[in-house]
Amino acid sequence: MSLLLNLEGALNDDPKAPWDQVKAADPASYALIVLDFLHLLFKVLTISMRFEPANAKQFFSEVRYDSLTVSLKLTGAFEDVETIEAKADTRQVTLESCRDWLTACHRVFQVHLDDRVIPTDIPHRMLYVCYILRLLFNMALDNYEKPSGDLSKCSASEEISPLINGNHNRTLFPNAPDSIIVHPGAVMCILDLLPAIVVSGNDDPVWALVVQLYAAEVLKSLVRSERNQQVMCDAGLPRRLFVVGNSLLKTDVHLLLPPFYYILERLSNNSMQPRELRYFLRLDKPLCCRNLEERPGEEPMVENEGGPVPLTRVKALVSMMTPRDYRVGAAPPFIEFDMSVEGF
Image 1 (spheres, rainbow, N blue to C red):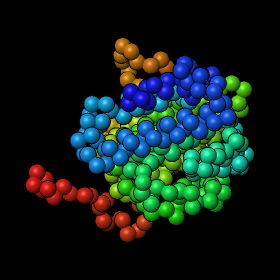
Image 2 (tube, rainbow, N blue to C red):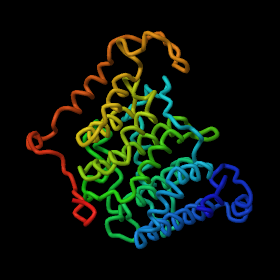
Image 3 (cartoon, one colour):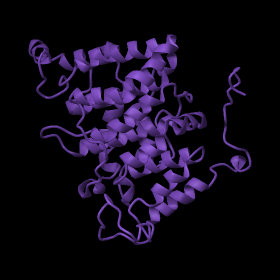
Image 4 (cartoon, rainbow, N blue to C red):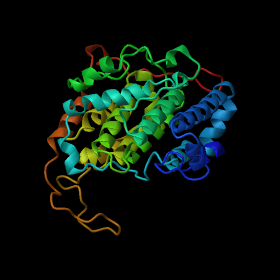
């Protein structure tokens, strides 16, 4: 973690010392040098937790994944933003208009640094963000030095095309075998970094929205299997989704809404606390959600408060309560019992 903290400001357009000297010495290969260093750090950290469970326990309890999120934000690839800002100008962006940009993100996600070639059709900051997403993806699934971690065989255009065509039930890497989430904290890092994706300089701001959409699709692909849904429910993903997507879930039309609703619907099939469901239904305080007596620290009343529950939220609630398969109507969700001496 100390080596990761030494990367502070390394991914800025104007890197801080001592990384400014590295860029001045070899500006053409600077991106490869930094990404290779990040790849090595994540690889060592993940493999050390695989072969020594005590390391994984110490990282979870002492170092904590929140510190990893903060360290990655300090590199300069992310901004210090904690919630998604659903701006009016971003609601008009459609999937068809960003097909090529999503394909470029997917190409970065599949890149191999051993080839010493990185895509040039994407802004540098978005390049760093997409590659960090890949590193966190590999950490979550413990994919390093495993055949299942090789995503180079997947065609970028073939994987992205179902999403562009509006098939929101399809996920990234549909042909890959369902992988088990080993480190759910890495998945939480991806979600926490999603609102911090912001373009730099004169880059088109739509790039940030496209990369946020791609990060949401990565999260969506991770909760495809029922085992992973159970793991992420235990890790508190539903609660964190409501915090990060607070303003997003209040809108009716946005590019990020389908993947967020997909994740919520899958997680609700396994476990969602009544408090979380109540929070979801009372997001913008419809009907008579506000207390009659004012409380100190309560949010001020807004103009559209007290109206009906939005139709999109009602549809999402119906979808949460509807079984996806007739065979799961009677059978309970998969539960893995602890059969050790201390368990059952």
